[in-house]
Structures are given as structure tokens and as C-alpha cells.
Length: 331
Image (cartoon, rainbow, N blue to C red; front, side, top):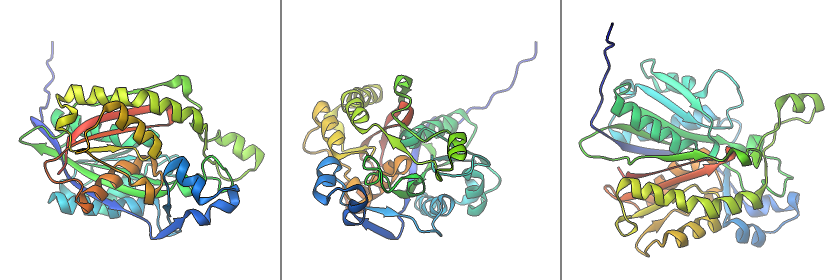
């Protein structure tokens, strides 16, 4: 019987660098309220959002990803030629195929790495980090570039009162590579397919048949809010437990920037101490789906709310309904 050879990788993996790209155009609530017959006060009360970023025609899923990735690589001290895999989390790359990842890898000047997109909506980035961790430790990659990117303004109906004020654009990236100490804890992930249609785009065949234009996102906001507020704190606690970390040892909490009220509910349930810094990037960035966690982490580092060596809890949740959480060390 033939015995196959197997590869082994690094003992531990960690995030080595973080980068972000925010589109130039800042869109205040005043620009979206008329189309949805709402108000700035209502939007802030419901979500916490004051402004968001919308990408221009020249700011694409690929170009925003490349910009964020270049910053992450520079901060990690890694050359693009050292990247063995590119994992892109997105739901707004409008080509069914090929993947955005292959175009991004080429634009960065990498050496023909493995490159693929994943579709786990708002939870995609945390899924990507988990995959990258296992790739580095398993030996299939030395360094992995993980990107969360969205241009949700392309697929958001500006007249939909349930989504128009929420979704936005941007890109965030991290480099995952070998480490002498554990830098990424075990992932806690899963899905609740009973609520598969709570956040979705329509079947493209229906869009084409009806001639309605773009496949706009729809969301059952109240149902998603209740599900996330009730269920996600349990997932976050499991991630802490699996990493062997208590809330008193936590420095930063970086949840998916879906809604400030969901963030508040999770923080209360977890009984986070006042010393834990909580990401609130949604106030200025809106909900950028797969990009929201790396964007929020980058903002916390820039603002001094997160420092190298800090212990951070990441948790993301979204369409599917899919979710993922892990504890990481801030690079």
C-alpha cells in the first residue's frame, strides 16, 4: 500500500499586518433620507450610522482590494511575491466567474498564488481568517492574504427603507503568516439555514425575466436584529472559551459593524469590562459587510484604541445566516 507524503506548516499562525481602503465619497444621512422618507435622527437611533462611504465608478471591488492589500503587505513587511494564497470575501463582485481574487493577485504582482473568492456575506472575513490560519499551520501556504471587500452601493436599492441607509462600500485586508506564538485562536463558526432568506438577493433569472435592473439586496431587518442580538453573544463566548481567554483579559471587541444596538446587546450579555475598547466604525462607515471587521480593526489601530499585542475578539454574522468568531492578537 502506498503511503502519501504530507506537508506540515508553522506551529502557530498570526495576523502580521492590517490594511484598509475607504472610498473618497462621504455620504451623510441627509443624502439618503428623502428617498426613503426618513430622517437623520431615525437612522441614528435605529443603527448608529451618521455617514457612510460610496465608491465611485473608478473604485471597484478589485481596485479597493488592491489598495487595502498593499497597505497590509507593507505593514507586515511581506513582499507580494511571498503570498501563497489570496482569499477574498465578498458578495458584491458582480461577475459570477472568474473570481475577483485572481485579478487582485495579478494586480499585486504575486507569483501565481492560489486565489479564490468566498461567499459568506458579512461573516466572510472571519471565515477567511480561519481558512488562512489552517492553511499556514497545515503547510499549504506560507503567507495568506485575506481581503474583505464590498461595493454594496451597486446592489442596494436607494428607495428601500430597510437597506438604503445601512449598506456601504470599502475594503480591508490582513496578511496571515507563521508566528512563534499563537496569534489566532480556534474559530467558532456555523450557520442557521432555517433563516436562509432573511438577507438575500433575488434569483438572477427572475431579475432578467422581469427586467427590473440590478439584483438588489433585501433584508428582514427585525428578524435579523432579534437573531443576532440573542444568538451571537453565545458564539462570542464560545470563541473566548476555546481560546482560553476571559473577558477580563480582553482588550478589544471588534464585532461586525451591523448595528450599534446589536453591538450594545452583545457587550451587555458578555459583561465586557469598561476597559475593553469596542469598535464603532459603523458610525462613519456604515455596514460594509465582509469589509467591516478589517476596516474597524484598522480604525481602532489608527485611533490608538488597539495596540500591537492586544487581545481582540472578532465576530461576524450575516446572510445565510452564517457566522464566525475568533480571538486574535493585534499585529
